[in-house]
Length: 620
Image 1: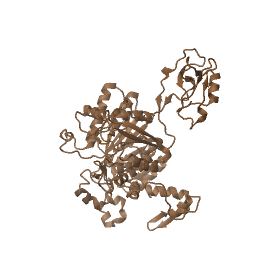
Image 2: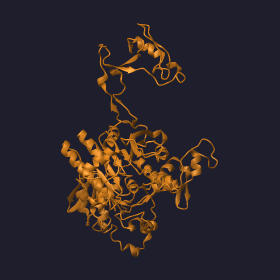
Image 3: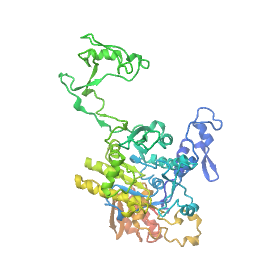
Image 4: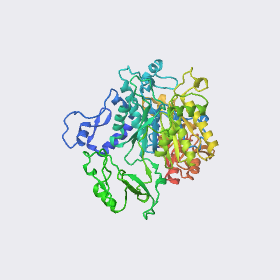
């Protein structure tokens, strides 16, 4: 009997794309040297009304390394996330996640568990100022030693290189880094999800171009300006003060929208006891010149006084002459008592189409805070200035309130830094007195300079600062608000697969060498490690509740009630199968060598099929 094995690797996105194309255009599937392939010339013709003859010029952004970036985003990996219980808070019950590791590889591992489930992504990536470090994504094993010796990798397997403006690939290297990460991030967004990206003038133009390509031009959600400094920056000899940044927002589809700000209804009164209810006085001025909209430039005549009110030559009125005359007859126009005044509209509260309004900029608003606020907030919380330029809590809270406002919304930040995003989620949940939002933070454990104050305070990498911030913020918020919410977080660390190499490439081993691998799981891996990789491979969110049970003398992990039962003990037999089938789990997983013997392996499969027909059984 054949028993399905989990493949224990990230999804092969190239293969998935090929399957989708084959369903739509089966005639475009052909064979190449390495198996099935797509005939792109034929596919190109299928997608055009006119005859296609060779390559044509087209509008798009190109750079050295773009094809490499596309390939990089699609390559599957066999890595895993290992739970770190000692760094976690309320590991078994919390729904918040903190992941240490290269964000490109982590995004690949999250593809199945979080596909289409994230409501908001916020990232504050390197701005490419010339002094930033960027990721150099090269997965060739034979380059490992070279990268380590050249300083491009360290003990945390970082692939960071400096990107000075003098390099010949200054913009190209940054684009090659960002493209695959954004491409994978899009897959994780819900249909009404939104990604927000902080950036400055160095790469805002290129970021817009690659986001147009990945998310679609029509899904540009907004370009928000934010003033990061309270004072003018006089260091620039041109006397142009670059004291602002941008937050570029793209949506997954056009169905996304902000929550909006509540309209101030206090300005609606009814001093004349109008039977139509509360009303407010609204400006009637328009925005078009006479040349642009001549039909909006005319005199408004007060029928009672005969006074004539001309339009502003540069603005005109907001409504046509016919509409204004109708509103006069309905007593909806408020005329001034003097001919030097301006007519205004009587707007009734009952006629408002929405109780909220939108916004487009925070350039002149102090409500979202400045960079100095972010620094002060973090310094006060962790007792020192250990992190440069953290974002303001108020800035991220404002965006989260507008985007992630429904129960169960997930906020993802894969350039987590000091974990301001996690802090903002806890703040807002405490304010709402509910676990409305949950977060996933991803951060490379970038080593801290040994000469820095942070290192002297005991922090060895950025992740240690982020995790400590979350712990202290949670404690502070709980003491101040007493809100009964989720203050915990599960920590996972990116690592090589739990499985021996033979698990993925058995064809490369002889029978004699296969006998050496009586267990295809690495000897230093725990049941916790195996469970995390199984959940990722089976597409289950890492935030699901985990319980430990003892069934027939064996340890069983129960994930989200009966969503998954996992037992990695040895000696699995028919009696155990009978016991576990009583709970009718949707999925069960065992180790391939965990059965009592080959007969038991077959019988367990048959018994589960008979006693719990809905149960899907797999092995690792």
